[in-house]
Image (cartoon, rainbow, N blue to C red; front, side, top):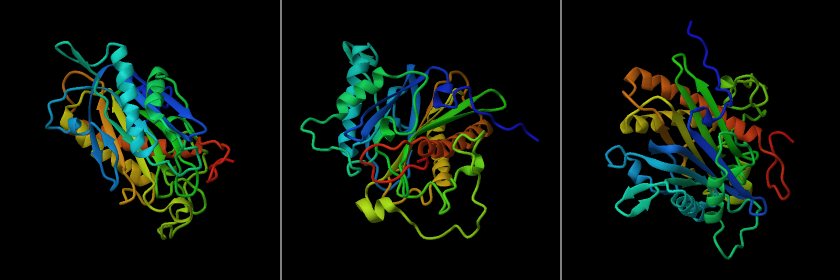
Length: 333
């Protein structure tokens, strides 16, 4: 029997060497931004399977586009306003001398995605869009270690029955390949069964989100119950946005296939997922160099990354903390 995967030393996406993650948030706003960057540009692609996405510069990540690397990826609250976080990250990268050099022009490439948190009880009566500054702050905070739960893009996130948040997890494969996931979980679907067990419980390692275990009940395939969508906001107020990474070399088309496969991780942790009212999206990136992975290697990387994403979603909710003015409870009081 093959040895079980184990988390990396941090159990974060930054176990993939060279990656850093930064968070910035405004507690009064109940929103924030998360930025992932690296020491050098990295190859990435994206797959969108939700019905209501909000994105910036994702077209350049398609396998048939000429772009060969990006400088950062951004996850943000704020709905369409949050896309301006990418502008703050772009400014910060340019100031640091990072970006695509075309003659005298330096152009940082910063794709991003947003979730909806505009009706979560925070102060949203700004006169100047705050997300540009939050993006710059998140970039400046980027480091190998970062906090989970009510942090960054997960600050104002809400799941169906409790607060959402920011989550991450990693795995080391048998050949030493490392994969990791980073997610801002704000779905219309529930991350827990009616009894409060995480749907992702079968994939939990070392009690990383409470150790409650799978729900022993059967007949759990009931109707959608969502306090968020039904009692508070209406339907179009959701989205799970994620990044997965590996240090195994991949082609751009393989990154795209990885992003598609890893959506299984959302579907195993959120019920239902990929609805018309979610903008579910996964970025997939590689920091590796050399010969791209074989098809069988890619299949294993995709499997492991999907497991990481399921665990990261549960960790996002498990690590959420109570804040003044919350509209939904935390999984942990």
